[in-house]
Amino acid sequence: MELWELAGRPEQLRPAWKDRGEASRLQSVQTIKAALQRDEAIVVLVDDKDARDAIRAVRADIDMMGTQTFIAWMSEDFGIAQAETACGHLY
Image 1 (spheres, rainbow, N blue to C red):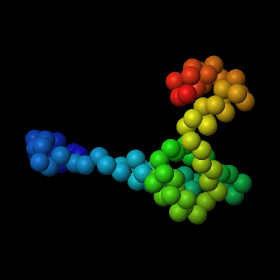
Image 2 (cartoon, rainbow, N blue to C red; image 1 turned 60 degrees about the horizontal axis):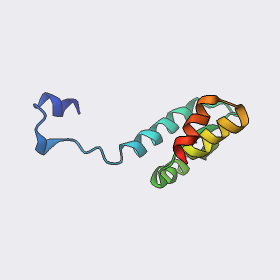
Image 3 (cartoon, rainbow, N blue to C red; image 1 turned 90 degrees about the vertical axis):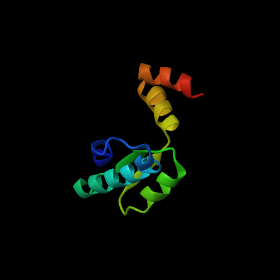
Image 4 (cartoon, rainbow, N blue to C red; image 1 turned 45 degrees about the vertical axis):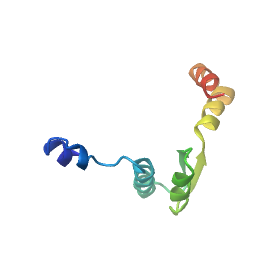
């Protein structure tokens, strides 16, 4: 991205943003995995099917859930008022 900006942002050389989310999540999970203690797990919020598949490839104790499930959990089990507001926007 920096090189594109230094080149004057020519439209024909604009970087593609496609699939950057999955790569970023996978890299984050791999970084966190390296810091995990034996009795710790990674909880990942992910809604994209391809991203879930990529994360499953990491050999670690990983729990995945969708954003909607996480927000409902925060609202129902922990009584977080802001989560209730978010739940209303998700349904």
